[in-house]
Length: 156
Ligand SMILES: Nc1c(NC[C@H](O)[C@H](O)[C@H](O)CO)[nH]c(=O)[nH]c1=O
Ligand SMILES: CC(=O)[C@@H](O)COP(=O)(O)O
Image (tube, rainbow, N blue to C red; front, side, top):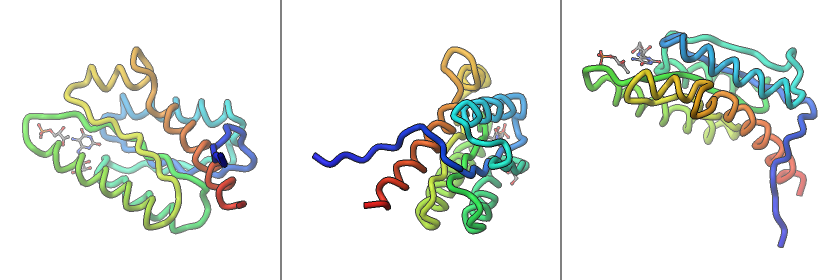
């Protein structure tokens, strides 16, 4: 049975990161986790570029610009959307998730969804480097895997 899988070796992988400043206490830790994962898997620092946006709602636009630039093999989107007292949370989460998926499919490039969508700050803290791991780290590993998987698949 022919099986394709993305290995975690990183021959010259170029990564774009889009991070939201909103809830920076959380997103900065997601970013640290992502960069830690990338450098541990030997992605060169000069092959990592970062764009800060005001909030998660703005992530898809910068992700689209990065995707269309042709300068990256994968894009990692990082944010933290934490429910407040209105329905704003629902609209932000919906548009960010749809927007990121659309950028990936319409530009044929891995765009990793590293946007926390949580009911409260505690849940976000747990997923930004404490007891539930670091979603930024996880997304970075996934980005490397996807790039290598696609390279292997396209070689056939
Ligand atoms: N409440 C959160 C936001 N809100 C801001 C929006 O993302 C956007 O920047 C604003 O509506 C202007 O377009 N953003 C987050 O990233 N996280 C939140 O919890
Ligand atoms: C996710 C949000 O936009 C939310 O944090 C905003 O808070 P609120 O709904 O109380 O205005």
